[in-house]
Image 1 (cartoon, rainbow, N blue to C red):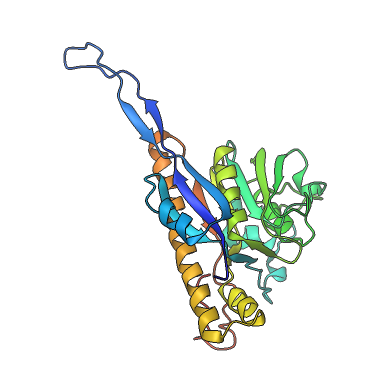
Image 2 (cartoon, one colour):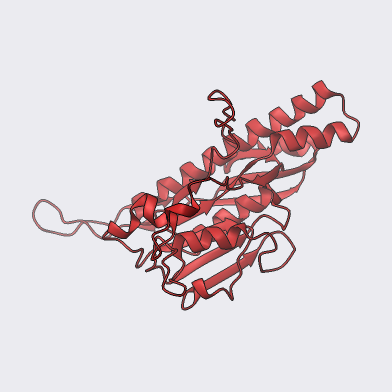
Length: 283
């Protein structure tokens, strides 16, 4: 088998007692016990026998082979630069963010990307909590993570507004893509749960599953094209299922006051300026 490293998603639900309820005669009744979803991931090499045993485990929600991820890069637009009005960037102008009564105050944002240039003037006064999942160390050798963080919560620089949510005081920076814009699914799953545990209300991700890259890597390793495509397709399916299950468990926590919104970039690979039908599927 081409891949023996897997991500195992568990739901280690934890119990929580509700406040005592008031009965029909005004007398308190016993508190109720609730089971709060508590997703966790384990990463490691597994044999076919071990995989079979894990699938019988009641705590195990989903299993997927580790698969490469890649940056969904920005696409330059000819009209983007000209949209700035001198006081705010084109992004603020086109989204009409300056007219919003909300500024992100009290919101914890997580940017899972290529890291951040923490010394940039746009992040002055913001409490940046960094964690590296790539092994490269903190910082941003690619630049995209810094760009996204600035767009989300960057403070004005030389009088120019660049951030939508200028009221954000605490931001979580998970480095899940290296200087080449490459990563893997085990890193992103761990980073999502880290951000949730750190109290993120919004998690931003500009990345996708690198299905073509995996097929290419396997064929480069000598796999026949049909076998490489089959392995990559199964890996894609399994990771899509695992991500859906993880997102569902996170969404279910909202009932207990622990709400996190997952946001992912999509669509930049399409080239509709060449042909209206040149649309690349969401990765």
